[in-house]
Each structure stands twice: as C-alpha cells, then as structure tokens.
Amino acid sequence: MSSVAERLARHPRAALGHWPTPLEPAHRLEADLRPAGRLWLKRDDCSGLAGGGNKTRKLEYLLGSALAWGCTGVVTFGAVQSNHARQTAAACARLDLTCDLVLVRTVARDDDHYRRSGNRLLDDLLGATVHEVADDDEAFTELAGLVAAAEAEGRSLYTIGPGGSDPVGTLGYVSGALELAGQVEARGLDVGRVVVAASTAGTAAGLILGLAAAGLDAVVDVACVYHDAALTAAAIRDLLTATAALIEMEVPGDDRWTITDANLGPGYGIPTEAGQAAITRLARTEGVLLDPVYTGKAFAHLLASLGSGAGDDPRDVDRRDVVFVHTGGLPGLFAYTPTL
Image (cartoon, rainbow, N blue to C red):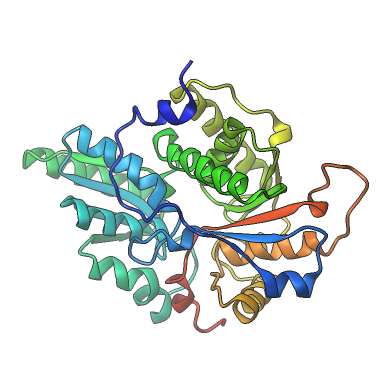
C-alpha cells in the first residue's frame, strides 16, 4: 500500500511557501521555566507568504485545486483582521487569480487600528477586493452576488470557507505534520506534546492525522481561541473523518489529542491578560512575536501547563520535549496597538 506522503502527492498543489519551516529551540525561555523536557518552536510564521502563517500550507492545496478546476478567481471569508484572508490575497496575487474577501465584523471594534491597519492594510496592498459585512447571513448574500456576477462575465470563482478548513485545506497540515515528524526524527527528539491554537480546526486536524501517519508518539494539545472546547472538538472530528477518507487512512483515536478552552477568555479576538503576558515573555526571551488572537492565547496555555508539574505517567508530556506550532499572525499585533 502507498504511503500517506504518496497519497498526498496525488492532490493538486500550488507552490507558495518556504519549506521546511524552522524547528528552533527556545533556550532562554526554557532555562527560565526549567521544564523537565526541552521546548521547541515550529516556526510556521516563517512560511514566507506576505508575513507568513499557517494558512499558506492549506492554500497550497486549496489553490492547487482551484487551478486544476480552471477557476479564474477566489472568494473566501474571515473576520476583519483575518490572517487567512491576508494570505489568500497574497497567494492569489502570485497565481494571477482575482481575490474577493468577505470580512465579517465578528469582533466588536470600530477603531482605526482595527479597521485600517494590520491585516486590513495588507489586504488592500495585495490587491484584494474587500467586502465588509455585519454577520454570516450578509456574508452568504454577498457570496451569492459575487458568484452570480462572475458567471455572468464568464468567470469561475473557487469558494474557500473560513480559515481554509475543509478536507482539502486540511491536507496542508497533514503534509506539515510529516515535515515536523521528519525534523523530530532527524534531531533525535523525544516529543510528547505538540501545542497549537485552533479556530476553524483545520490545522489541528491535519496535525493529528499527519503525526499519527508518521508514527510519532506525541499528543496534539489543542488550545481553543474561537469556539469553546465542545464545538471545536466537533469540528476537529468532522475534519478528521473527511480528510482521512481523502488520503485513505484510519481516523486516529481520541488518545492522539487533547483540547482545552481554558485560555479562550471572553471570546474570539478579545485579548486576555495571560495572552498578553505570554506575548511579552516570548518576545523578551526569544525575540519571537506572537499575536493576541491566536498564538498568544495558545502559548499562555503552554506556559500554564509547564508550570503545573509532572506526574508519574511515562507518557506525561511535561517529562518530554514540547513543540509549539507558531501559526503566525504578526500583522494582527498592529491592530491591537491600544491593548499592547
């Protein structure tokens, strides 16, 4: 039977990122925390497309599919400061595809920092056409109008859901997990846990599938930043089932992952004190920048877990190396100037 990597290779893929992204030790922070294992950063913020981030891996497969279908443009969705929207705009510019971004005012902010800087500034610079809407109902109405207008002009639009988190997009992180597993093996690391933020769940689901396929004995520790743990877990399970079918593998068991919403705070896009402290701590020990929406909250979870002590279970993640998957989000820092 063919390997998962060989089955991935059957799916159309557009070259967009800088691979492999670095796997770096966090020596200064590690010395400060004194965990039993070592702490590593998987730098997917260095993926190379318009500021980097995790969505580039998904977009390679999504836009590979769009090109295979002969589409001339893309429409996708996100919040006003969506990292996914910014990376989609950049990918479309590189591949000569039109790009329509339907951005929902999910976060209750209307100041200039949020509406005009950060990712929104880059959306315009990258040439995307932006449609700001009030809610999901208006977003679907906008989509219908865009599709109808394109058809009338003889163009074909490829629609990508929020975060690029459908089974095709999730393939990007199956591939990313295989890349990470190869780096772990090459360095001889004993990784017990891979920590990642989750919103629309495609990154987490891909990591779970890919690490299981690689045979890496590590738990994917999911930190919710969008919905609560119950809703996020349901989204992960749906994507695990659908994506596993695409690459002809069994769905990994629940022992391959954990999930928490302990650092979600008041809700999506609302900074927390712990998240802000995590941003400052990593910046001042490793010179690595997190963001208030995704990675700051996920890293706050990692810091809290490392401070909780280790038990006697030989699989106890605190006794083994920990990898934090840095999913990017640097431009969003500028949108949160008032809170930083």
